[in-house]
Image 1 (tube, rainbow, N blue to C red):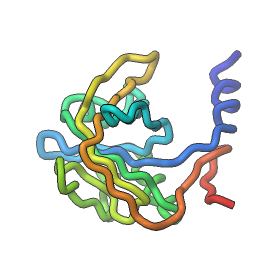
Image 2 (image 1 turned 120 degrees about the vertical axis):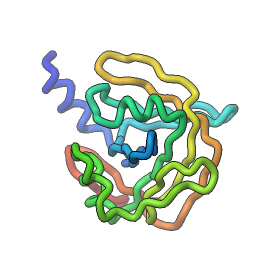
Image 3 (image 1 turned 45 degrees about the vertical axis):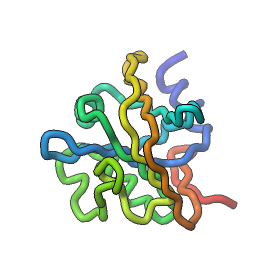
Image 4 (image 1 turned 90 degrees about the vertical axis):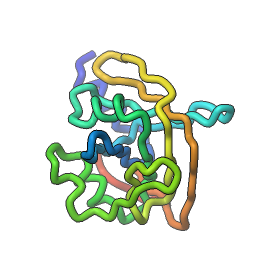
Length: 155
């Protein structure tokens, strides 16, 4: 099996879209992540898979906390912008500090989670980042989905 065959097969898996962001040493770092899932109710844990080559990886590991914005339908442009490299990825996007941990959360998202880093483990070319959820808020709307290298809505 080639990496391309593996990626093509995984593209068939429909998933939600999140933006994961942190502030560390006075700078904001973030990325778009579709490799996100709940892990445990007690304690409340979520998992994010982060490419270790991503600019934000080190900051996410060192900051000790991070915010997760679960994107709503209509936030495709924000997802694409946060998936890019470079310091301008936050430019023009309506982020605000979370009320509990102060980490960046994208306004207009379907849900927000504020997490403290619970554990990080190596997994091939990625890092498995477990976050303990300290606050969660939900908002009205429909989820943004991603499958077959395109964004989708429900129905």
